[in-house]
Length: 159
Image (cartoon, rainbow, N blue to C red; front, side, top):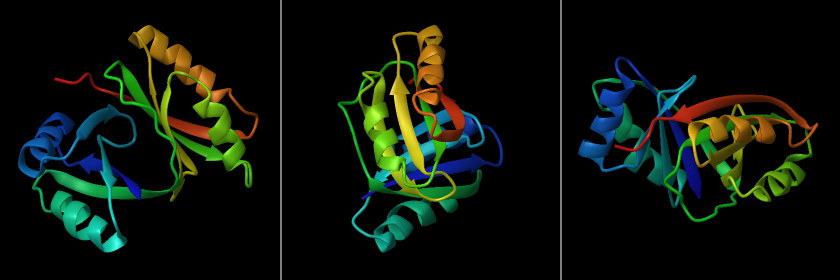
């Protein structure tokens, strides 16, 4: 199962992202938004998630807190290293599968998971440029009248 771990930093998110990558060898992506770092984890169980990810991340000195979303329906395309963003989506009840299908049809949508947590879905998008990325964000937000609210976190370019 996939887990999305949203990390809030006590200090600089760049320092925390580097710390997570260097000390824990996790794919930590710095983002601009309500969270500072996004870590994707493929886990076998909730115990695995806790022991091998969350407790290790929380033990780092600059980490403030972690918010975790568990995927219950995952859709993934091959990874593309272009400008990217994560969109947290709040959707109308019982419309999740339809929205997931609609979003996944878009070539710019790399991942779209229905998750357990504060939000209903997490979409990862890419574009050719930052300007294009903002157009894609608007396209995703307007993809369905059943998307009620979104929070977008633009990722820092990979170093």
